[in-house]
Length: 456
Image (cartoon, rainbow, N blue to C red):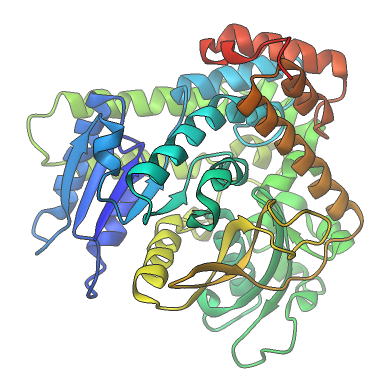
């Protein structure tokens, strides 16, 4: 089976390849094609993968290319993991937003909108090429903002594009562990919302499939503050909600504190990763062999994980990340399980970004949502979840309206739609600020020149 990874020079590609190396079942991936626009980054990641594969019998072959059409031809699965504008673009997204006193995070608020405006036209072009060159391939979208980009691609690929994220996986595992579930990976989760905007409202164990274990967590102070989200949001707020939010809801519930922490930080997250990864890729460029490449990558990854959401933890007074929190959310294993379920009809239940198809009645059927799905050879089928009510429903409806404005702007080139996306977002407090944000982002990103004031 042939897997194509778009953004194949990206830092997290070795996580995917490591999961493939551990898959020894029949029908596994035997060829990985890496595509990227940056030859040096491709070469660096190829070094790490070669080091990973050393001594592993029948390791999947790896090829690299900068030709997108060549990468897509013959693919059974396509992982889209691109970053339009690179980490320099992410740093600019943060900088422009913070100058206006609003959040610049890469998937949430003004920063997420800017990233989406850059990414949607590229993602749509990729979707069209997949439909033409590899019509039987399944696209697994890693590209952020994951729900928005998946919806853009689904307009051309239908159900054959599925978005994944590791945040709900990590959240569910941590909460199940805090509840004492014997096998947290097997717990059934009632989780619903949009990507980076979801809530865990139920946890069910195999031995008691009909009893929701989550309410008991709110009565146990020690258990409730034993995992990252409990420390991040605080026990009292979680009791008020009656659910456990995805960590990204911290940007909404504690926005003022987070923006202050971001503005006072020595570096934004994007600038930190830009500089950190530049050092890694420079180190790889100086190597004449793959020996030691994996160890260098692993050291860089450990530092990256330890500093994840540092500003939010500072704002919440949550302290350093605990050892359990440093464990990867496992998006590479979600991707592998998704591929296996489709390619081999090995049925699995996974939290994915898919078209709603009635799962969230407040949204239309084509709206991409993040919910548990049953996956088989026919694809991903969303499962029933508890209905969204109150502020949860309001936030989801508001953010989906913003995403639709971004999609309109990306497809039509309308600056008016782009301003509307900024202005309607719950974390942007003024139409005037929205207009200045678009001006700032167009100055920072030449790729946004396609947005024209006269376009509808």
